[in-house]
Length: 358
Image (cartoon, rainbow, N blue to C red; front, side):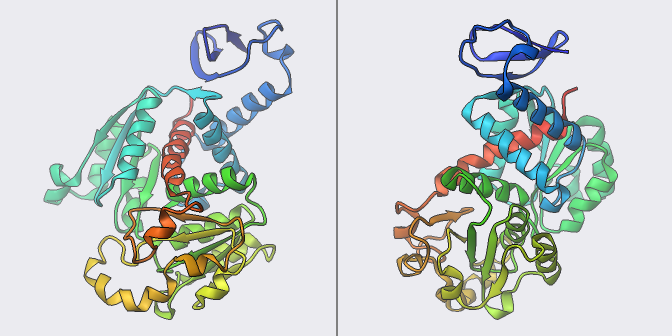
């Protein structure tokens, strides 16, 4: 049975003699027992318990690894964590295995884990035996004995999946060339904050349709009932299996469109999204891509084609005046900085539920 202890603020919900999360509430004049408290608190406790029970111990390698209901519960928990309504504690150890450079992902995961009361070990492959050829399956089984959870940022999706197959601890996709699911959690949270809903909105992505952001946006938008349009040159289309997966999720209720026409994609869009034209590992192609992708630049003329209340998102880092103009990213429609902050909140929610309450 759960009961509340009256602290200064916020209130701490306890099970037995150990606190596992807190809920900030106004002072109540009712007895300090859960059963007499009202609908809202029961809903919070119920939804937290439900998501922690269903996701505890699981991997998060793709947005497709969670159900639609679980995705919404993650977003709801992230919102409550951001507002301070709920505070979670997880005295665990997170390992970061990053083969790619990172600012937002590294810092947001680190701060999120510290705020949960846990610790972080940065396992840069360049300073571990991985750089000297230790097999990934050996590394996975060893780290499984030391860590409670790991986040991996690498090139090949298959390497991420191999690690997850050989480790029993939860494994999080912190970015691969195929998907970037944590970023899309933050994107959806930001859209929800701006519009109060997700269902029925239209997100249009402009740029490299074959990159991880396009793939994860196709899946994420389809899951929450948003229309999704990918505007990209013909030789940079999203993987066909991802497009088909998104269409299967949408079931004809929402648009899943891939087009070479940026104007068609922009028409009445609520959310305008872009990313760099050459991702990490493609730097040698960057200069050659500029003339191909120039028609897909997010600029003021493109924004004029979108909905009156449209917002602009970018996963960062941005190459200003290439994929997005300085005017737009600094303009009133830009929600890029809220989007970047929300990485920390969604990842805190993700860490908390995958670790569970032990």
